[in-house]
Image (cartoon, rainbow, N blue to C red; front, side, top):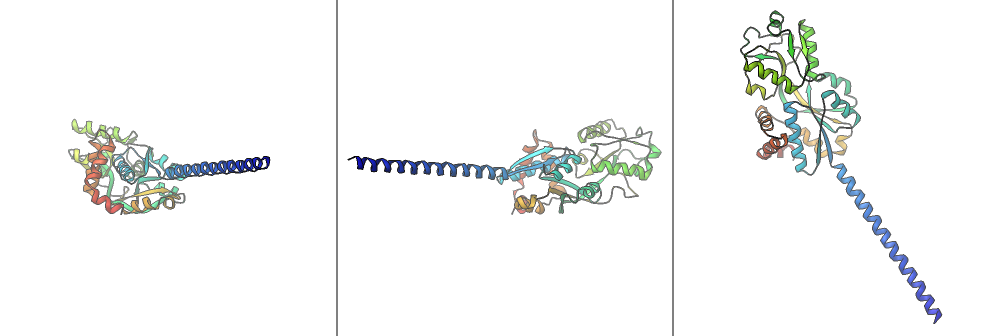
Length: 299
């Protein structure tokens, strides 16, 4: 009888050990699955730099909508241009969607070409940059006219974000033309407010601006002739990504390369975003109405 008790006791111990081992394996598998899920979730996160410019706010929110519809989690980091490039170089940012070449952002291309991936692909091919004045300022049609009428403008060019490529080119332009002016730094919204106030009062104002931009549909503004071509001719808009992004996100990388917009499309997108309480709402509306176009990008 004692012999059988010993056999049963030994069998019970073996069974208990098997159960404990199975539980351990089950917990380990669950932990691994949880870790894999967390890793997969993390791999779906994309961080895009956003600059406080009308067209940049529009396209970053548009891509946030598109990518989140595809299952990605998208974070928009609000930075100026200089900080954007440093963050791309450090790998703290995945993408920047607005690089103007060959002139406006040439300095950034030169400085970061070995540490940031600048796309050959362009998403807008008809951009223009230069100094603008209201149409009613009939005396001034060229940058060369500005010194003669500097009292009219209080010897001031109303600018926007310091460090922006266009601001740096404007400083170069002032040297090229020997302009006896001061370039005032502020922000794009502040500059546009100054333009709006001047137009409302029919006062002269000169500022660096670019197209595409909604401001041209609201006010009658004209680009000043640039005989020395300091601002360049037609600019094209590229995107840039951190090193390694294309390997980790080949799908998104391909979508960015397929992305193309014309004057009407970008103008309408900017209008939707500008006229919405939240930029993302305007972007969602535009995406819903242009799904066929977007399908061409994300095929």
